[in-house]
Image (cartoon, rainbow, N blue to C red; front, side):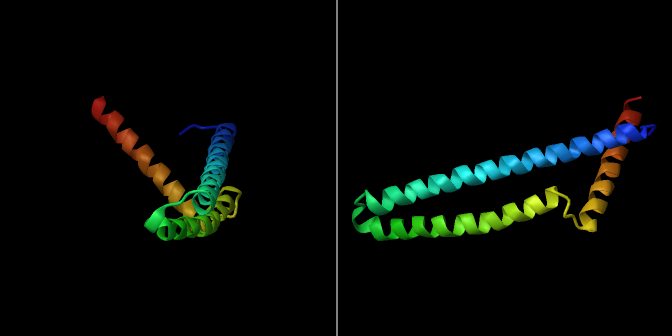
Length: 114
């Protein structure tokens, strides 16, 4: 473990960049899925005669149009808080323990091969 401080800074910055990219990907999927739900709601509620299934389908779509953005939005907010440095110490410690564990496993594997 002879990483210089610059290497360590680079690795931390790279991990943070990956977290930020994942958050933006999550936000993009959130927007796309919820737009699709709104479009589905508009189609089902206003344009399609579904016969006897109509009320159930409209209620199901309406429930998803309301609950999905709300609940998923809360999860997205929490994800953003974590990514942009509102972190609980327990998560930091877990990351460090997991990194050490994975490094130890890799070391054991390389020792077995040699």
